[in-house]
Length: 319
Image 1 (spheres, rainbow, N blue to C red):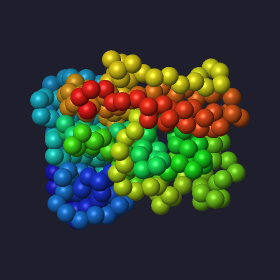
Image 2: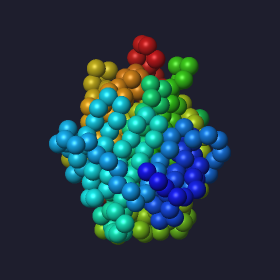
Image 3: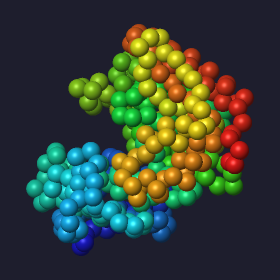
């Protein structure tokens, strides 16, 4: 693919990523991965251009969301809304139609995430669709399906004095027996009904009235890597909110929903080592209270209980 644009070097949760795209597409990629400039040779490269990515000449092997997917042992190809993409272990190439549009922009945005998440997967690193909450030099990794309440928990924790490393994408690493997490510095989108009267203090701006989401500046995010104390899988309760430990045998399965890319076979295989390592940390399931008026308060009460309990639990043998 010929992309006649200078390469911007960006830090994505500490990963050095080169992005080659025109101004419009660079803006799309930076909305997803942040604008943190860095230096050094890129570990991964994302290219966006107007030349279509060649796709395999056979029917798709799978579908993910609405995208058609092809794959072999070393490659994955995508096609969605006229946008084509291909990723390997080192690079992501995206070809978009020349005519701009919201559907095309959305496809470029999401396929950039899918491609980079899949390309970034290593035995010691993974890009997670989740939040990270910091306290006392450690962090909780928060995962869950779309709409499960990750941003609700992140907003409630931030207002309660926890630090927020990221509310949508984070990078988890494993080295020398220690699991660490670092946030991707994009502006957090938090529920307006959680931020409420603190909007001015957080310099929040209503950006998605339909979903009731406000954006706060990325400068409010905590930087750097922190050891992962435990993992929290969020969801919803019919009552006043609950939490429970997840048994060790069920932990890797519960954590699949933390993948930042649909689980097509070769991508899932690439993530299995890190899912297994994450499953050795304490994992709890937090279910948000149904009544909106108590949801934030109960979220913090439950989070506090999880934090204390995690400190009393050893990691599963093998970490």
